[in-house]
Amino acid sequence: MDRSASSDNETTPICFSINSPPFKYNHTIASAYFSAIFSGLGLSSNLFAFIVLIKAYQRAQSRSRCSFLIFLSGLVVTDFMGLLVTGSIVVSFHATRFNWRELDPHCHFCNFMGMSMVFYGLCPLLLGASMAVERFMGINQPFSRSTNMSKSRALLTVVMVWVFAGCISLLPLGGLGSYHMQVPGSWCFINISSKPLDLIFCLVFSLVGLLSLAASFLLNTVSVVTLLRVCCGQEAMQRRRNHEAEMMGQLIGIMIIASICWCPLLVFIAQTVLTGSRLQVKYLLLWLRFATCNQILDPWVYILFRRAVLRRIAPSREWSRGSTISLYPAFTASLRRLTRPSLGGEPVHRGEAPCDEGTPIPPAS
Image (cartoon, rainbow, N blue to C red; front, side, top):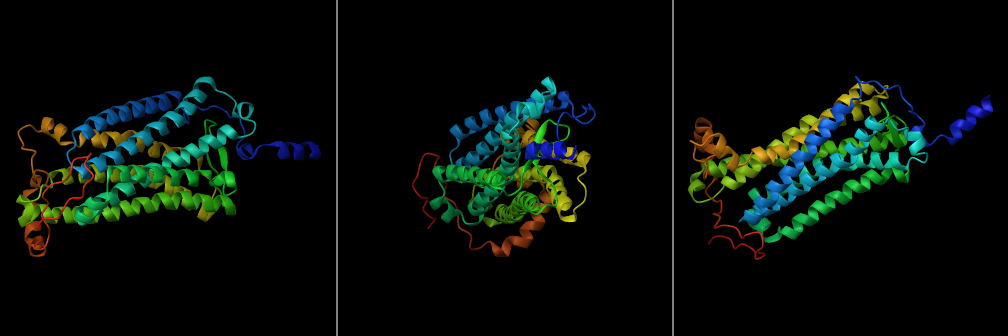
């Protein structure tokens, strides 16, 4: 009897060594309707946002706007593919109730889904941090950025983010951590345990995500303060900053949604492995659904927070230069009094080159 038990343990693939199917199916934990509705809503939202982004890119007249739209397009494509890959697997499981162990005896499929979960989870956070860096440079160092940043460089940054997230997702295949089947049997994810290698990989995943959110918060805060100082200062009539305010509003929305959706899961993973406590499956599923909402809500930030939409919502208001700041006149007056002495040396923008132009923008004389 002992020999047969040890033989079963030796032949059990590592991804099924903790949770092995078939599981007792529970509709209250995993619902086919919930997965199908979330996936369908997310895919349609991201597809619609991508179409809107393409049209906006064709009409864009400034390189800063083009770079920002490239980052947004990378975010939308990433969210769309993440929902398509992971959602199709989960919905297929609920529709067919297939047995993972029979379908995937060597854990290749499980490892693929685990890698997808890590890759498509980290990419939006890293892209959000990259957009925060791009806006920080664009607002605080406009001339150096306009000389260096280009459409090709923005594309390269997006690709580098994908490569970096892909390298992290490959670490378990190299022995650092592992991917395991998760309850209720419809998905695979990193093994959240206090074993040394699993602990290290869980901390890598959590810290990369949390540091990306922290960097986004810090840089966006500085950018917003700088933008408010400029818009409320004496040069407000000389510098066209309405498009900057629109982009910052969208970026702040993306950051807030990512923080609300992802922080609970990232903190939960780090806390579980550091304290060595037992994994609470119900909280893991709850925070995972929170994280999934990020991929659904991201495209709506851009779809809704555009001047074209705001004009339809409030047609009586003039959505022109400085209109974003003028929404709060009392705050604007107070901020103008506080920031006026520090605005004397700021440069004046003469304009920016369109998307297809590659010549640097000369500083104002």
